Image 1 (cartoon, rainbow, N blue to C red):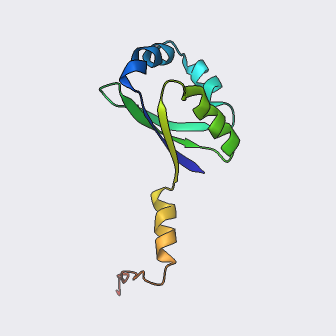
Image 2 (cartoon, rainbow, N blue to C red):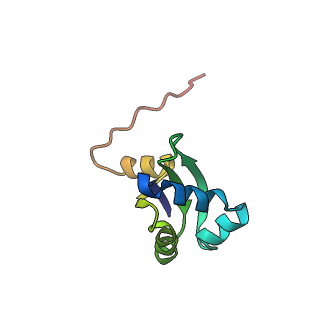
Length: 107
């Protein structure tokens, strides 16, 4: 399952958080998230005040544990998300959905 993780770093915790994150190696990142979470991408605001991550996991406890690693220095929100294909499939099953007619080549 895909999750969007948003974080904000309060001004009084930024230096501490930047130093923790800035000293991490790619191996530290893997260990921090754990083996049950796959980080698909992570983007940081240019201001350094927070960012967003998309990750994939079926283990809610592992996701909770990872978020707790950062909760002393960040405000974190997590919500499930779906990709375009899953969103379209869900819409197309609804009674209010009107499919566009398919064009055919009659040659």
